[in-house]
Image (tube, rainbow, N blue to C red; front, side, top):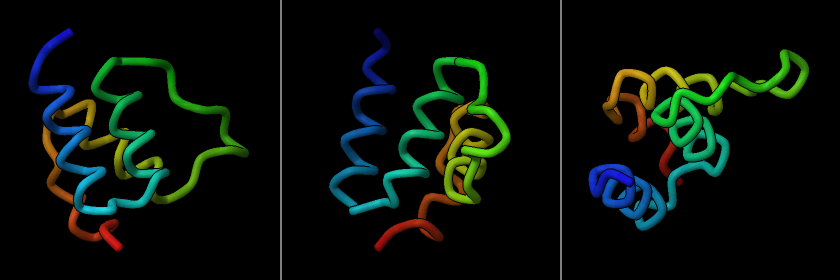
Length: 64
């Protein structure tokens, strides 16, 4: 697995980023299929989009 993935997840967790954002980011980064519609949250969707683009542009909005 790519070191960037582990480093980014560690950074997000240390920043106490919303769990849904982190799970979405991981899924998007790994190109997993998105969750079913009824389980998608705003945080998950933002993380999934950022992860798919390989960035954390909106992570600060989801930090506690």
